[in-house]
Image (cartoon, helix red, strand yellow):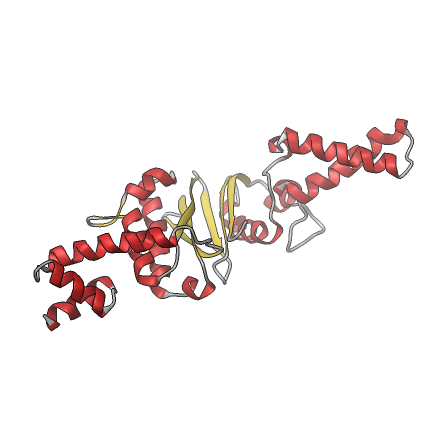
Length: 269
């Protein structure tokens, strides 16, 4: 019995009394005992599922040829768990799986095998039972490009960025653009992508502000247009001032390279 308890504790990370009870209930059958521990882990996980997961970790996996990449965010309750090596490996494994599947759909990802016989959903449940915190696979992304996909995770693991670029010089500026997106938080790639409702609301705010300042009605359009240019400069990647050299825009820094897509994850946002 003692040898089996030791073996199952190493396999599952469960406590000694939980393992002993499971072995007793399974009449000493180790496989059945593991199944019981998993089932009881699910119960424990369900009790923790209502807790808010405000911390977490972001991981990126890049393809060897540099043309594909995946990123995932798994949230937890405390920063202490985010620094746990088992938790970090779970998040990295999920990123590798997204890259292998070339699909970031969360529903299908949950049911996919993270390791033989263990789905992502089950792996999360087991980790919840072992770690003792609610864990949530909250976001995933997959990008590919005929040129290059750059990835960057901020040193604390709280911010992650993927950027797909192509064209002349794409590989040379890729890391710079990923770092810029990390720091400057663009919401859109180009101004044509700005949500029209967001733009209409911004225009309304600026018009009302100008009126409250006593600006003449016949000047409102020119005033608002100028201030909308500032809005684009702050929110549109290609129009932002390049973080390493504010004397030029991101578009100017790109030169002949082009950005096809970017994704930015930040824990808590």
